Length: 624
Image (spheres, one colour):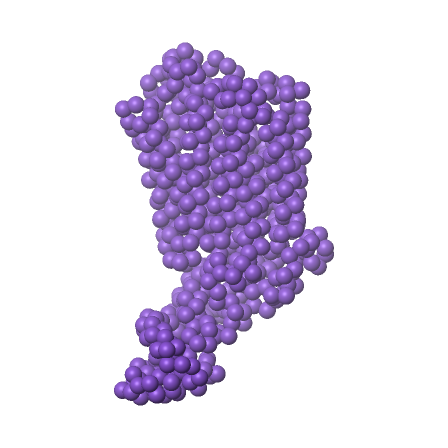
């Protein structure tokens, strides 16, 4: 049976605290997007400030732009893996504030990048961008996991999608801040296309440091958030039961307890729940070293094996000293979870407090470690589906988002000063965000718990492929490389709309719902890290591949047509993987997803669009 507090969360009505959690968690995603996607206009500014007299004339060399983009995404990879694991080991709330503070300090550090030469300034900037990426990476698995564990099963998708929607507002605000700052400096200076004033070096620093403000504003509220009930009630159970899963280990622990004289612990803790192991004989500890007493403890084996078992027994005794109070620990954590959720759900304590202490079932097959053979058998395909689809969508999303100026450069006039150049790039980014990116997020919020994750993800991949191929095939024939028309902008905006009303959002949601509580943050971090590897490939690769001639320090490559066609093919591959491997989670509690019957766990193919198969049959919910 499920813990009362978890059942109450699943059936809770939408309340004020849910919206408060959306804002608190969402501001992290807001800051993430601001810091990552403000880079396009900043690169324009850096070109004017540090490369005005170079052969490239106001353009940042390709390898420098690639480094600045890639280093932050590389930090995000490590951040998702590190903080994702810490979220499961230490607690979601305990490391939540750490990732946010890392973002705040790194944003300030980016703005304070100093040095005697261009090389030192950009090296310092790259270092703080990497540290910023660590914080950003940590925010992804923690925000998604916390929101999923606070939400009820009926509207969980909407709440997680609402958190991710803040990414769209972060993109928009980064463009608006850039436009405002550049407009102010443009009015106050005498900048020309041929001359960049010294104060322009302040512009990109101000833009980056402003990104620390929204994150810093929510730090206090993050520290005041209670730990999620799923973590509080699961972590000590899994720790304790992990040591006592097998019959030999239980025998050794029981003997160690009896041998050490702690009979009351044996009777009250283990005796009630492991009656089938009570056959371990009582042995006089004064004679434990004798051959006969050892064989009495472990009948049917040789003396050498018996001594090995005795060594294991003493190790287990040490372990048990550390965990012999785990009943109290679990009880305290479940009680604390109930107290915390009482504040969240506004329900009497009597309705969510447990009537008895929950102990791990010694015969349960759910106590397996991360990345074990049983883990991969039960969750390997889910992890593959989440990681691979996130990898594929980020190839497309980040390549298009970070280098929009390469795609719609026909709209960017030549002969502009530093402020006008950055302003024009930011303005087009804001237009795309308002017209397609943000509406896509809101469409997901509305439909995610009506249509389902899998169908939205497949549809999004499909229309992204249509948009990219429609742009790519006639790109040079229509002279869109020189002047993009309305048709081009419509198709380009369509890809952003369906990336957000599609896989860019659903890949953030699904990993927070599929995996057991003790692995949830870790698996979300692994999936997100795979996505950011795809982002590095997409952003850096697209920057180098999209040129069909030598220009702006970029060597001749395959050109825009081939690059966009490849991105379209990536979307088709994502659609196929989603159809065959991704499991629907709509309408199911987190415990139902993680305790899915083994028989159904083998049925991973062709479950979409098949009526009752679209949502798995309800399974009994075991204790966490």
